[in-house]
Length: 486
Image (tube, rainbow, N blue to C red; front, side, top):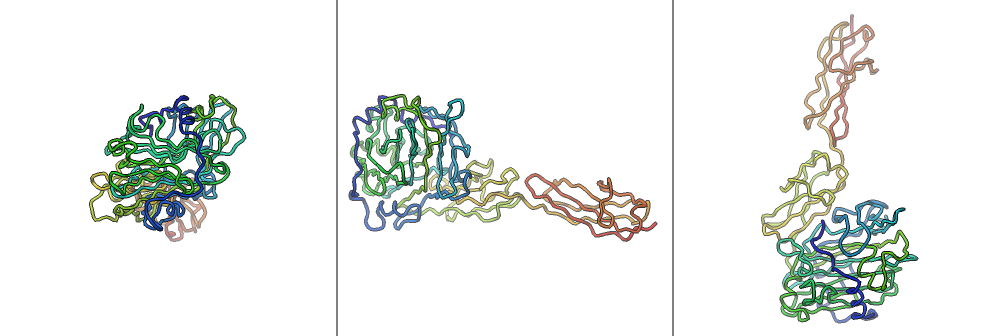
């Protein structure tokens, strides 16, 4: 979905100021003190990701399992187009740009075509309800390997999150943007930033945000590293946001730094995650002091993501809905919210809303063959939104086929009539094939057959074939008649 803002509005001057003001910071070699104790620490959850972590509820996880070249799963949605950031690529939903590598990673690849135009990928989570409850915490984390190519100037990889207000609207930057990872131009450095409040100035010094500046990360181009952000609301009036690389604290923003109003406009919101790889734009321009889009660069640079996870602590556990039934055309899938309260339902196929599918059950239509089905439940207030795991891909349905019967006398010159019975689900397209002693009778493809001399001494059968869009073709053959007599 297009977002109603130009992401971070980073001009050349903004990005260059970020570099000059933020400076270059070496990542610390030891973690600073984190909130919580024992296994419930953010560092312990980051180390466990994407598995369940003690003291945390897993809201989301994806390990990107699947055959090489296959599309991303139903937990994600593609955003297709251009995004007002100064980048020159167009994001697509093609598996040339966004695909599973077959070894447990998602690849987002930037490609230049023969005309010089760039395409790449940008995906967002279908679940847009990740939040830190009052008195609780929200941890967002991903394991990412940045592009390592010969000429990387202009490449801009990111793992980030956007907040939405109570009406589900994005009011950038007031509703919050959290950048767990930004990296540009192939340099061994990463940036982590909180954006909030006003689009110009304000409590978060926009459009720069409250940023870590460029942080040295020498191995980030060659290996997978974990980038994370924690929204910590455990202490009223002293809430904080903490950023991590590989479980080590790298940047902290305190509620007191930006004030209660700006903090509360962003941090309690529902967030969703974004993974993207851009070409050119304000941030890479500012870091290189050049027109990064025009600089020579290698096509095919790839950002790989081994896993993504979201954890929550200190909040009531909201059950994840389950789906009962077989994912086949014509069958009925039934959702179980797992809750005592009344909930709303929305069914999706590969992340796309199934029109009108808002009850606890779904009869699978023929247009969903090959797609994976999920159901999202929410309380009537619109909160506590959770999405089921996807089903297996929908397969063709099974027709309710009936064995036909033959009426009439098996005698030369008589007419035999096939009665196909009632095939389901109606309507089913039926065709006929008459046979004598198991051999096709030439031209005998109507519902009736006039017995000719060539059938004398033989037994007649009729085979009925049923076809319907979204269903496997079915055939049924009648019992044979008596031997045809003169």
